[in-house]
Amino acid sequence: MLDQAKKVSKSAPKDLQDDWKTVIDYAEKAQDAKGDTNKLMELAKSDGSKIQPAMDAITKQAKDTCKIDLPGSGS
Figure 1 (cartoon, helix red, strand yellow):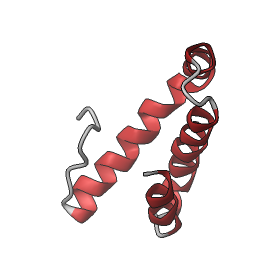
Figure 2: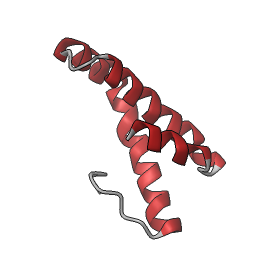
Figure 3: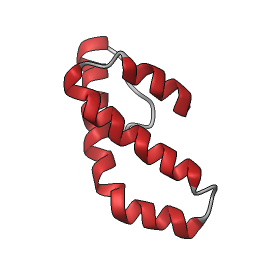
């Protein structure tokens, strides 16, 4: 999934580049935690508040521009 997100982010509009970077950086850090609950909790504390606004922006653009509803987006 991370590889697919990286591919999609390369073609994302400029106004979403920062949002995609936020999501990808978070996913990479989560992957690096290798299931360590403590590391994942720390990640959620430090970066968790950045993820939802980024995902909301990506989801809105996908729906409005591409007519795609992203699964698990919470919207």
